[in-house]
Image 1 (spheres, rainbow over the protein chains, first blue to last red):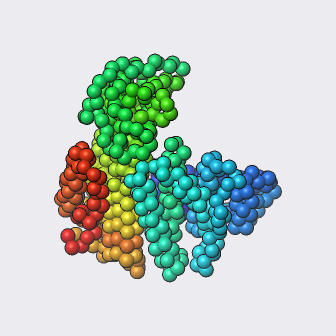
Image 2: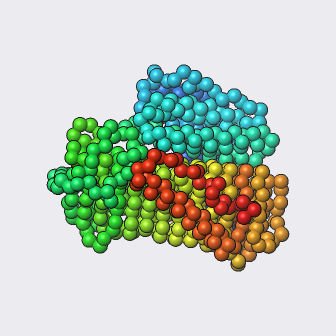
Image 3: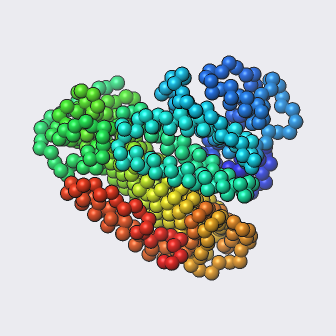
Length: 223
Length: 351
């Protein structure tokens, strides 16, 4: 997702790109499945917003997600009817937040599919602290992300003896490198909070960590 | 659904050439490593549009192409492991099952029509494919993946293993957590996601290239086409990219603690901030975005980059051959020295 074109998707949906940028983005969309997926997600969010009436949560994860979405305005929860005001716009932090949220929900879903709802590991619901320079939408998405990471980490911890020791070593080392990259990028964001590159790096490495954990958990499940 | 009978015909002594020391030594999944004394050998006719799906827990999948509309399945496996061959709609699938639980090691030698799309999955499996001209999807947790050929979309994923692709025609999507990725002679777009291994790209002809690595070095030699999009990012690794004379590109380099070096005279910067430098070559129609947090970025002419890249590849192969010899000799697993310090890393300004 994090590439040269992602931050143009929102403006593209609002028909606010100039001709040259629009053509370049459309060419890119033809070639980039990930950007197409993000665009599809954004379209789905916009399409769902006017019709969303709320529903009973299926799992204990849902209320927090719903509340956060409402609070942030990522997905306006309003009665059906024509949207009022200007078209929906997504800032770069909101795009990152939406992307992380979806990744986190995916991670949580993987865990729920493998485990019952009652055996969530202690501390799995701990929220990430809101740092003063972290945009609130990202902080919220990180909280959901932390839950998914904790869930998947517990699966990998419990099942690591079922994987080859060399593979476990690679997974541990990879996670360590990702965490280090995340820490360095976050530290740099403290000094330069609007830097798009750093924000993309954080989002990319968070997703990468989730993907790796999910893959490892899947491998354990297959044994 | 046509269920073809499983054939476990011949009892043959283990053949070392088919035996996979990689899989047997590295997999804890198989409680006992039975010798691969049973052999399956059967040939199945297939019609155009048929896809082959293979799943194994441990062993190897070696695929070659031929010009017949048939799939030949040769497999060495333990006597208590059976190879099930099923056909469901347009999917021909091979799956091993064990008489008492988990299947043992299976070493497949498959010969398939060159047009046949492949879906190959393994837990502890080395996968090699040669000569096909169709889509490939291959995933393993531990094991290398080697592809010569491939077309349409080629998607390869390994956690603990290396990916090598040569001569693909189509879109490549590659993911590896360790041991690195090598691609040469690609005509098509490329997406790479790596964590720690080096990414060596040579002879790339595509309009969209996206490479991301956490700590690996990235080398890119290919044609930067007008209107194309090329994005290379490594958090702590170095990046080296070949920029040919006469290229039309807008190149942006984003650096934090590293530096940018060019092996030729750069035009004056369009923009220069504390962390970003932007240059315009020719009419600037391609977009080249290079990002390194703590690594360096080098812009080189193709000849210089190729020379260094070839040396790196040669040194790497020599190390791997030495490791393979050590494994074959059943020496204790002296864990390989990590790639990198021994390599001629791109961005190492002293080189």
